[in-house]
Amino acid sequence: MALTHAHGLPANENAAPSRRYRNYVLFVLTLVYAFNFIDRQIIGILSPFIKADLGLDDAQLGWLKGIYFALLYTVMGIPIAWLADRYSRVNIIAISLTLWSGFTAASGLAANYVQLAVARIGVGIGEAGGSPPSHSIISDLFPKEKRAGALAIYSLGIPFGVMLAFFASAFFLQGGTADWRTVMYSVGIPGVLLALLLKFTVKEPVRTQSQPQSESQASHAPTAQKASVTASLKTLLKVPTWWGMALGISFGSFGNYAISTWVIDYYVRAFAGLDITQLLIVFGIINGTAYAAGVWLGGYVADKWGKKNKKAYALLPAIALIIGVPAFYFSLQVQDLWLSVGLMGFLLFTSGSYLGPSFAMAQTLAPLNVRAMSTALFFFVLNIIALGGGPTLTGVISQALVPSLGETEALRTALLYLLIPYGLSIMVFLWTSTKIVKDWEMAERRGL
Image 1 (cartoon, rainbow, N blue to C red):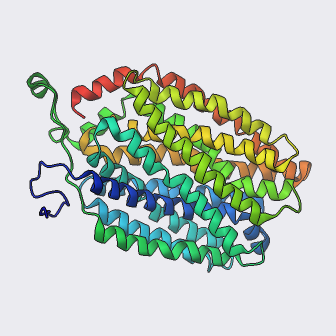
Image 2: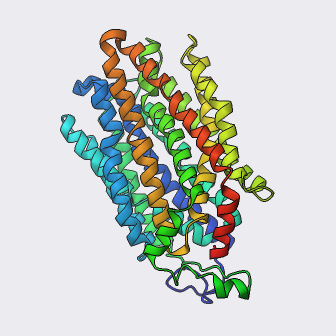
């Protein structure tokens, strides 16, 4: 048996980790990300029950689903990424997972709106330490030509996490007869156990340093180790493609976050008397199949197409949204419940395609010594716009329209406004496709 040193690689520091070990680490990090989205999504699924129990309106629910969680989640991501670029990323993820899982369980103890808001803020603080160090670890374990695929697999934590949140809710709510608090306990506590598995089976990898392709490049292109962190960040934030991918995914996710946190409320209001357990199970299946397939295919196709044309990483998300967004519009117009759900599922399938390519660009275009910071800044833009804005503004708009339209039509109209950010996402991805080739070449000259 080969000896391993403290970083989990073979005794020869230059030897690459085995494919089996790489895939195991990717699996565990994906599972951690799934718990991230279980705990993030659960409040949107339980929203009708929380609304009835605590007597909340749509605006209050919007703040809970969006900005209360997103603000400190976003702000804390920057200092945590700074730590992740210097200290053990495995330890940071394990501690963060323990925190956000604990606060999710604590949400079940909330007796009023303020206590629930504090718990949601705690979940946001914990989740800030999840993705930036995970992306950095994955980028150290997988070469650049496989990063979109690896990060797409990691991004499967989103649909699988949402799927598990729906299934857990269906199981523990028992058709609406059980307390929503039981669901909070049931999804929060297992995350602490997963943190222990991560800590004791995944080792901190060596931070890779790619070699320049030629002696000429070595003499002219400073490596990430030579450049200061400040200089590297300034370089990163001047890259048009980085901003384009960040804004493209942000506007698209503005819509997706709003839908994921309000869709159960919408169907409960628009289709009175529906079987809530059946609806939760169906949405769980849709997220675990259609959305997951879209996420995986997005990374796979982008890597394959990208070998011939780097524009693929931006064109693919644009094309997918052009196809999927009309389905969302019609899902809010039809009177048949399951036709509406099917159309919503088609949007999930197409919109999942932008995750792998976008996250891959956040890593590929970043100097090596700021990879975690690149992802943190990427998530800063993404979550302030999408996670903070989508659920919150949808709730605020819906509540403002309730006096004139009633609760059902107010929420339907608020959801229709999401066509605007989806349109912006398409335009930004198309613009980014005109910049990506030049920016990729510049990143290669710096050394990936």
